[in-house]
Length: 598
Image (cartoon, rainbow, N blue to C red; front, side, top):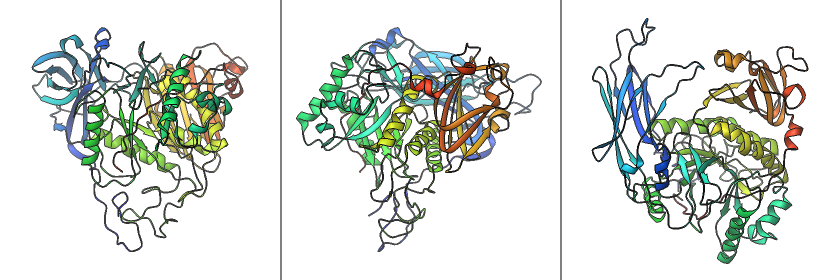
């Protein structure tokens, strides 16, 4: 038997696991990586009246990938140049020999006045030139430079008929966001940041008085619309009860003040799988094609809903999914010696419940970064998204204790900092401390933070770790900035942004040096002060902020330039955040379960 390709039992010898991902190589000569994809998947007939687009990515670098091509730079490259060279590409996108779109794009973007460097270019096209069908179209993308250098890429375009019944969940392939309709099955598609739990069905959801209304009210979740996804865990021994739960969740879509509509198509509304012990890649691809065929698409195409796959293994090849979830569980666990098998865990041997982990929250950051790098290497950046599965359990198997509520939020914050576009914790029921912290974090995430994280116009960058603190900022072209930071250590720590890397490299433009109105979205174990004197009427500058963290503390702050104040010194305090208007809860379900890769 193998787990993550490794032997792990006492009577087995150490054998190097296979299936590892290749690593990008550096080259002394520059290369150009040219890629294309549809911007939204799937397109539907209703998108004809919108602005459907093709994403074009053209990047020059000295890191080579399988689809990179040699590029001959101008004399004197990389500069500086007295007169900037022409790096433009004339791009054409064809389907069946007909040109869908054509435009000139820049292969080496220059920073705009805000210091941003845009990489993905959107080429609008007329969707009415195509007919909806189950089979994908092949995009033939071509780029030619003024000196005659030519590049090409191919990709699929999914354009499905309107479904005869049920819902549709789209993916924004520029950001990785899910797009759902509000109300269900009607209106425009809008991005959401899913947050919720894998939830035990038998003897838990089936025993809840009043089904979902009673459950959420008893847990204090009907008071503020917090979780927007619930993933019932099979088996479903009582299909009548399953139907009743799904019907009740549909019914809740009619409750006033519902923030997100239910996304339910009985037994088939999103598809998920779990691989704990991968053995081979082909069954995953076969399952992926089968699921999409059952969901209105065809083999090699996408259906009406994305397919997800949970990966326990740190480095093992995979293909068959649109959403990849990592489930690093380092808390309460000895990750170097297996309490289950009585054997040490190494890169080549052993099963400690957290593959190739170090035993700290940094394992989450490392795993997220690994996945992002593999996405880019394999040309998946504009076809797949990464979610995370925060650890919400303990006291079983390898894990001697459950995370604290603060540790749970720290896991969630770190995952978002490193690119997660969804959070589904394992498992509910969980501790009251975790449920309370998760609920409190979910509100600002779904109501404020997501508008930055899922906005394709924002500039996102990661900083850290500095003194154990990891941080990301999302900056809109107007200077509005979201800061999310987490202390990964069990000790207090402080970070002065003016002295840190973030202050040295990011805040160079007038917009970012200007005064800001500060809005506290969330704090748990973190307070702020400023490195410059602030009077009672002054706004603050992001670059002057000092973050003072307790162990595993997390903070989220929005800085809006030139806005009138709300609370003291123009801020909204954490207590005011907790007193915001109460909204009703709704559940977003991505139901029926195709367990693939077990």
